[in-house]
View 1 (cartoon, rainbow, N blue to C red):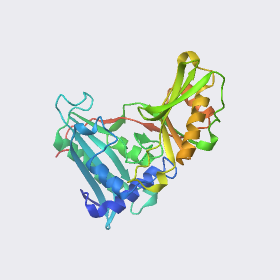
View 2 (cartoon, rainbow, N blue to C red; view 1 turned 45 degrees about the vertical axis):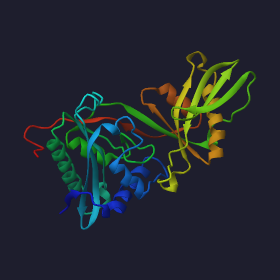
View 3 (cartoon, helix red, strand yellow; view 1 turned 120 degrees about the vertical axis):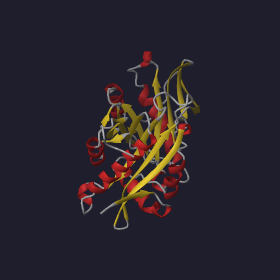
View 4 (cartoon, rainbow, N blue to C red; view 1 turned 90 degrees about the horizontal axis):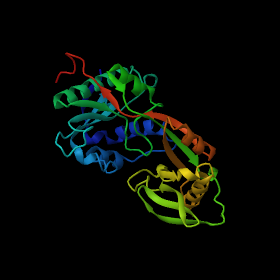
Length: 308
């Protein structure tokens, strides 16, 4: 029979392997180090807005025959006025990972369900106002609940969680497949530091028409080298008056030249599933869809269940 207990440092290699299996099913070739996983259990520096609101963190594992077959990381947010309204007095399953049913015997649904019961009991003990769930493992491009994790979706749904947020499309392109940036009369390009990375701004006759920002710091030093060739688009904006003039391709071509100098060979992008025009423009520029991910899952406790 599986057992659920708090995470121990000795679990670090098995937990990292389990997280990397899930991450690799979303973004090709991505894996993170043991140090990245351990650090994320204590603090999430990428979440610079919401991480300071966290008052308590708990990591649980389900163990069977001495092997970690499932794990979850839970967050409790403070209830004071300094916390954003949506997160105030909230509890969250930040991520939950487990072996899919066909890959482990005996059937790992038993371990996953047992782990989920322990998670719900922890949320009940916290007496939080609302219960959220996600799949934000500490790997680039993996957030929400990706469609490539149907076993996690099934676990959430049978446990009473429902998708209440938006859906985003995660796309990827080989840098060599992006458009080639060719000079245009009257067009100049300025490279600066932007909000989400290096920004390339195109100016026509002295007036900015659009910009793209690329983040080449996804493979931080503590992360595994297999993420080193990965970058993502932090922002891509075109002046509405200039839509249809091919500026997306021009800006992506400028970004591609820079990414080659950085040694990046793949570029991620994210768009709202309903923005079909933006997705079509990226697809035309060489991107392909990796997956769709559903953000914000919410749980309504059933009467008489999830008791501490």
